[in-house]
Amino acid sequence: MNQKLLSYMFYGFLLVVVILAVFLLNYQIQQNKHRTEAKSGANLVSHVGDDFRDVDSHAVKQNIINVAPREMDFVVADGEAPTTVLTLSYLEIYQQLQTAKACHPFYDFWRRNGLAADSRKIVRPPVKLYGTAVYPPGEQVPLSAGQTAALTDWVKRCYGLWLDYGVFNQSDNQSIPINDISETLTKKLLATVPQSKKGRAIKQTRQLAAQWQRSFAQLETTLEGEDSINQAEIDAVHDEVEKLKQLREDLRLQWMDVRYSDESLAKSLLQQRNDLRQQIHQYEVELESQKVLNQDALNQVLAGYQIQDQKLNQALYSDVAEVFYEALTTLENQQVYWLSLIGFANHSITTQALNQYRITPDQLVYEASGWQNRWLHSSDLRYAAQWYLCDLGMDCGPQSPIVMHYCLLGFSSSPRACGQNLQSFFYNDLISPNRLQDVLQFKNHYQELFGE
Image (cartoon, rainbow, N blue to C red; front, side):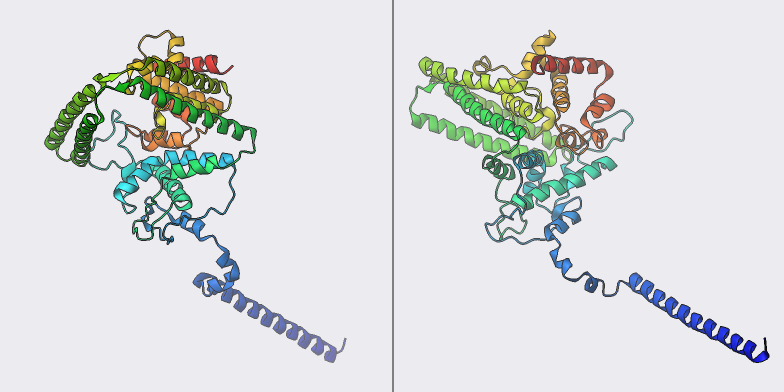
């Protein structure tokens, strides 16, 4: 190989190396440029394009809610309600209704205190356990991590339903709905035709429950008797009673404000309330004593009530948890906003005359147990009924309404309930081993009486 050829090959090799070097340098420059743009975020919105305008602003608002919804910013025309885009099934609306009922303590708090109030104050003081810190009355007890998570989750849920179904007045700066969310959802549920077998069973049971409530109220009114004095005298007594009740309610609100901060004043307010209660009771006794029972009317109303009572009791034999729940809570004849109270009917709030025609599921379960004093086992009967509902398939998971009530609400909150399903909380934390035997016995009676 001659010297000239070697020279050509050498310069050719150098040319290739130079070209590769230029290529690699240009590539490095482009990469550095992309990394710089990514870090600075320059022109980020311009890269999103028209798709950015398709984002559901309502969903974005839902995602930014923190512990309190006071930072939410929305405008609703006077008298209008936000429209729900999706068409929901009967079962989906039913679940929304159950959520709205569970949210009642939240709604009540926001209506009384405004959306700017700290929602942590909704949480009830925790059960006092040996070895836990003791805080002065009125001082906010720090929430556990589980309570904080549950509260944040439920503030989002409850406030979300307000946005979806609330009717707002534009002049209301606090953006408090003028309608009751549960009532709105109830009407929506009534207007919806269920497509599934389960939905139809729930709808039929709710219809039976409404009929039972009407017949029960009619029976209660008939048992009160007919007035034997003129209407003017009755109205005068009623007016006086209403004045006393309003005074008593005012005293209750004052007591709520000072019960932890001023013990002396709190005791004085309680005594005044008790005095008013006695005065009210005296007037009520006078009104009751002048009434006369119409036996013919009672016989007719009682016959209709017994028919409705038998129909609704048949729903207790359903294996659908929601059907059993609707029948159970209706026969107990109590508000179910406080879900931890489900399973025990307080017969003391109704008259003895009415109670003789009323048999509730917890009575049947207690009679089957052979025990003598139902009140001594009121908590055990509640736990048993709720556990039985879980066994039937009711939502008893960590995010369920009933677990939320144990976690945050109730007479005292139970932080250990947070993050567990209801059965685990009962078994591991709430119920002692000795009481557990009674609870399981009552639950077995529910199975024996209604499960087959």
